[in-house]
Image 1 (cartoon, rainbow over the protein chains, first blue to last red):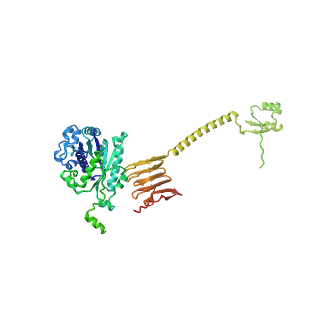
Image 2: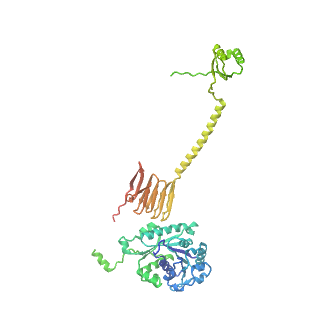
Image 3: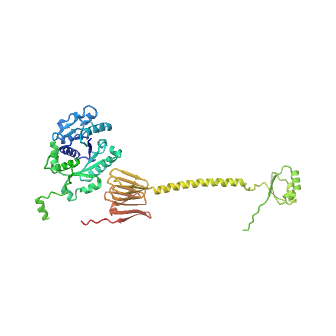
Length: 270
Length: 209
């Protein structure tokens, strides 16, 4: 039996889909069988970031309606044979999701995979609720800014009241990813510190991702940044995937700006 | 004022036949001479003269206040007693309810109030965690929050104790409190002589670093 992780954020555009793709691939590279499911019905993005756009034949809604089997709809990633992908429907909208059918699909995937990662849509409507309903754990992605944190706070509140695990009296594990940290802005006080964010949200931190230009390029090319061993963001995603697989990896402080030779010299003269 | 109180014996009668009446009084004169005679019905000149002759005191056609019988009084006392018992029971029940409310009016919460959550409490609240931005507390009683408040708080109690960040919206007794006055580590806000008084309980820790 695998573990179902929902990737949520509340606010849109904070990097949920990128995080889903990278964590999924990172886990697969750690030799665990992993499937990523795009729950953002009507706005399919994850296939592009994984570089599997042209391979999508059947989508999740067709599987739930019985038009295709799970096996037919699963797409194997080019980057790792442990990673599979289930696409969202591009033509339908969120209202087609039904609790019973979502549960059936999630349980089926749970049997075959070590990790089932669900990419939640932005917002807190029905699509979001279906994503968290059957999740065993949640990864909350935030940017270090107030609006993202308030929306994440709201999303956690809903997770704590509407998830099936909570209704059964169990706990949903919640992990925080702080995405797009700019060290210089944190140092100058323009960006929220991760301690402040953790104070507000009061959940376990699983990783911090620095702002990295490589991420956009990697998404455009369909090669998740986790494959790029030199990229700071890629390394951070790799560490998060390792932690999810049970490895003990220390937190790396990415909130201290790069201290290159030139900067060191310029500091002396400050 | 000088006054005396007497108990007087009254003989009450109605005159049907004047001869019979005079005959009756003639025979029983000794019995009735100290009585007050109360006569109902027609009082003729002949009777009047007869009564004056015999020097009997009489009253004609008035209603005398009548004392109640012992049984009636006893009955009334009994009724009053049961009524009193019922009142006592009602009062006791009310008192019990009130004291129960007083004893169990305090809610203690140790959970983070997250954005979008709304807590409505009739009594007092002791909250041992944060109130995040976007959350709302509606408290009818007194309120103590030991951690920072960033959301909205409406308190209708006699006092509240809290720390608010500049983002918070604090309304005490329907009046918005300036957050600048609540930045100390713990502040007491209370109603004194219908004025809102804010006193710092713990001063803000000065961070020298």
